Length: 110
Image (cartoon, rainbow, N blue to C red; front, side, top):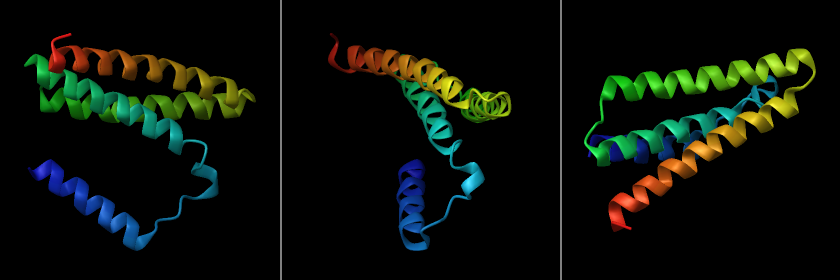
């Protein structure tokens, strides 16, 4: 219940304050969101499998976001930012859909 309240509070604060992302950080935001979603779906899958550990979740969440942002930053420095961004999105997309399929199988027993 605390997580749901935190989510609702975060959405309300975001809608009220309308935060602005600095121009230099804009390329990293979508990658960070997809990396965070991967950790969330992985955590949900672990929870349904009875293997959830909050420390593992927090480390996974933060490391996914940081590693993804570093890969995109490195790509920008090398001049291939778009290609590496696409690669990161594809990898995390595959992981998200894999976790979603596992969650679906667990919930619907199918």
